[in-house]
Image (cartoon, rainbow, N blue to C red; front, side, top):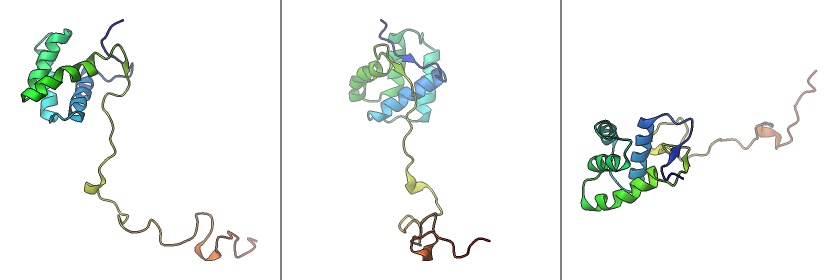
Length: 136
């Protein structure tokens, strides 16, 4: 069996795979951004990207900036690209958005509602839920 990671049939393609790899590297402490992701894709067009050793060297040149990162890169590369034939379903992880920089009409400190009623009963009915009139 091949050690190379397989990607799901709904995989959006090589650019998303590289973006997912960059997210994997960021998750392990490498400081990489959009520019490095674009440069990594560009670097793979100049080497035989089908050859794992060439791809590793090209990506290592783009993604590492110090000896510690170079030392860690091999294991991170293998964990993403040579994952013993396992299928990667989600290429780019989704994280909960940080809400501190988002605007919302709700008060961040206050309660959600000001009344004590429930959705199916008005506030002044003490939870009985009965209508004041007969409905006729």
